[in-house]
Image 1 (cartoon, rainbow, N blue to C red):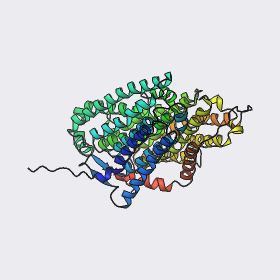
Image 2: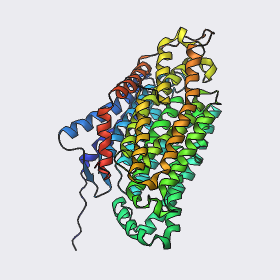
Image 3: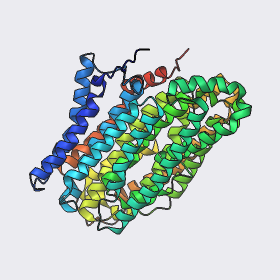
Image 4: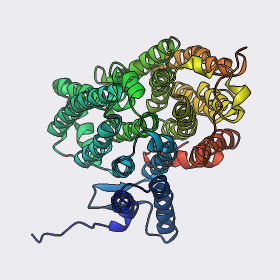
Length: 508
């Protein structure tokens, strides 16, 4: 039989290749200017995600980019990949824009490395989004995570930063081992690493799953543990508060959105695509829907209740991120035409609100050195622009209309309700929605506490915060995002709906 090489279709990977080269350009520029370039290397890095998005748009207009496969079946540009690549690039742009304060004050000799690592982690996320088989998906996940280990510990003279990097490294390595071990079980059951072929093989095996359900169950639990670390789902969430607190604030922001979005893509590809046949009450005990639903409930309860007690704003946002993961997973367990679309829209809205909030925290921390919530007392009197921006981001995260966060929560809850109307066996989703609504009320306490400190404190703030050009740009992008896509969500929702359609969930 004549051997044939697979079709590589390298045009589909041009944005990833371009961003990789751009990261090397940033690193080289910093070295050739003898690390005296100041903010220029930051502006150069900030241009990377924008130019990458422009490259993708040009190729798409020319018919060379979009829906297609490369390297045989390993690289696959589907609507989910394209949608989340926009989120990854937007997250990188906002994280880099939030970093100008620390590169002026704390990162003097390694600015190029800092930005290059952030861009290379974004490349890993983009490759992960297009991975169509388990090995390439795992490699993309590792390329995403390994640079983040270094970034978390980038303040090598700061004990908290070094501790954050070590904790993230140890827990990350452990979760990576669990994920790889779980993948080996799935490979052993299906005999393939291709996700589509795995779905077909396991669907046939499902007919006799009573004989091999233990192997499938072990694989599911291990993979859930490995990806749950990225998503900060309990009980794999303990690293988040310490790592967020010790990491440079822009890195914590990048972790809270970029890493979570990468974990969502990996989860959807493995579970919704490869293990869809095991999402059904009749397949208990290997019904991954109820397993993930339970983790979502725990995430919402723990995240929202523990966040109330936090005095450090970065730790508060860490527990908020845990709670937000619970809300997002409500949409993920809804295998209908609304589920994945709701997840995509939620992540898009979350990017603007959370990255904007962390940008405000970074600006405040750079000029005051404080991350304590009490330090925000009376801030509106001296720094109204930062205060009003932070208030909008907090209200969006809490789900207050007409901001994008409200529509995001509405969509995931509506997806769950729609699922129960099609099949009574999924009535347990009512409990999921009930917990989500109740804990959303709890979240109002700690989100509005920030607003209370800034607007209703009788004390005058001793700080007058001046927002520089990059920081102000990030704040404006965040504000425009949460306002515009909260009032006019249709363009994003239409794009997100194509994700569900690509996975085979089409409205009747």
